[in-house]
Length: 267
Image 1: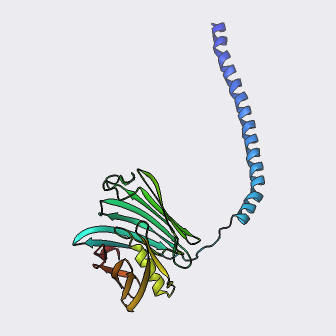
Image 2: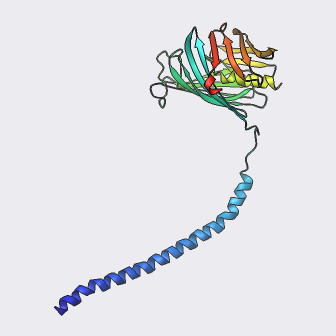
Image 3: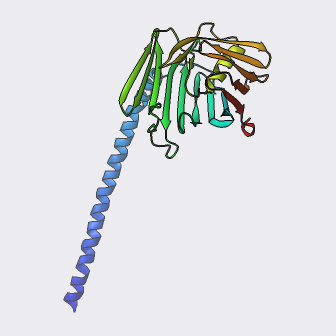
């Protein structure tokens, strides 16, 4: 019985000793880890200071005011599109559901130069059935994505669809409006804002990648009206409030024959 008792205690003594040994080893590892972390922090502090000096951003535009609006457009009495856009500084971005030439969702972004012209444009086309999936156009008129870059007198359009990448190059000094089946209405607000601030250039260009480039003009005949004129369509009238924000658009004479209204619940 005594031997059995002694044998029963031996594993306990071994277990305690092993635990003590592991505890000592773990304490050493923890101390070593703390020393390594402290040394890393000491080394990184001056590097972070240097990076803060060298990585300071270039302030392109200090206008951080945000404006968001939503419009619904009617085409011959039927709903043609619903668009929500936001303008912050020299950025215009948003989403639009367009029902012509076929139902789809557009996600768009425009970046503007200091002179108000479009520097970059990116429009992505998605299926309404699954807005995470690029549109597979049934009509063949719409791509998966269309991009534009304007630089050094070249307006370079690229689009990608099931047949690959396509390019259209326009040798013009600038682009101020991108035309399409149903235009991105936020572009009209951008131009109207420039006009209200007396910052609108007089040599404006309306460009459709496939059709061509055309002269464009905006003028304000009255306090609440702005007229959008181009060589490709009859005049389009914007009705504006006292702050220069568009309330409604009459484009009935244009190729799109649109009437656009600000959604009242979002004013």
